Length: 148
Image 1 (spheres, rainbow, N blue to C red):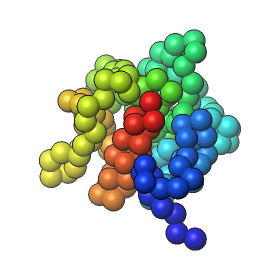
Image 2 (cartoon, helix red, strand yellow; image 1 turned 45 degrees about the vertical axis):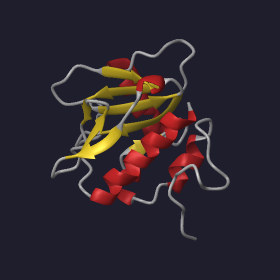
Image 3 (spheres, rainbow, N blue to C red; image 1 turned 60 degrees about the vertical axis):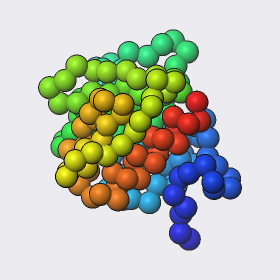
Image 4 (tube, one colour; image 1 turned 180 degrees about the vertical axis):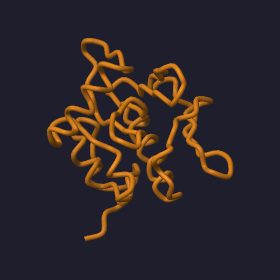
């Protein structure tokens, strides 16, 4: 069965309260290898814990939706964390950045290599090479931001 891309025109729209349904709609295998959600498996939970303890300083009532690991060996030291309030971003050699969904005006790919930017903040995607994977990630981020 062919999965429909995530967008607001689809019926049975997944919600941010159900990360499994969002993950299962992702078509890009390359992207799926780098995204993970709470209770997916023990490896995913360990990665989320690593993100939370290294660069995503969550509010007490902030809920995790999904994480992205942008490291070669899976350490999760760089990437991003999507929560119910915003996105925590950590790129190589950069300080961690938090952008609340209410402050997101633009999620785009720029330049020849199609670098991801949220507003004017570059989000490192060193582990994603396929253009369609990057485009699907942009759609995912827009969908989650629009849900808030």
